[in-house]
Amino acid sequence: MTTTTGDLWDKLDNGSYWQKMPAADATQYISGETDDIFVTHEHGRWWVSRSSNVGADDHASLAEAKEAGQKIIDAANEAMEENILDSLSNYSDRWTISIEGGTVLLTSTENDKATIFGSEGSPKWIAEVDAEGENKVLARTDYLNSAVAAAEVWIKKDRASPGPGPRL
Image (cartoon, rainbow, N blue to C red; front, side, top):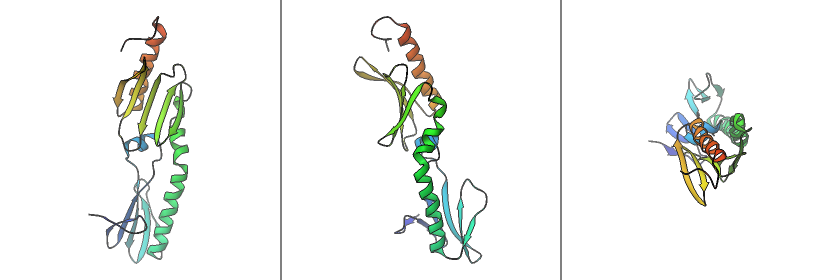
């Protein structure tokens, strides 16, 4: 069991502290599966390490190690939104990409009735369309590519259909 200290570090035991890292890309943001950062006491020194990196930085005191770890987290927080948007850049020729109120939103540049969205920690991407004033879910999936494919099939059908749009 963990207990939270006043400085946001969870104390795992007498010589270990932990925090979750901010998301480094859209997949981590939606899934909630991010790196962890640890402060541990071994061989008379305090060490800061990340779960995805080999090695650790040593510090003379717990306070120095926590401060160094917090600087890593703060820098990652500042870069998070830009990193999320950059990780989606391969969709930017067909989709307008934004983050609004914590939700990653992709809106088709060809047909703005088609949107894809995902929120932090909700492990699903949802593709939906505004069909005659009512939102219809096309896909609810773990994979952004699947949501994009479902929306693009609908867009293609909508483009080919005469009248108000394809039937869902």
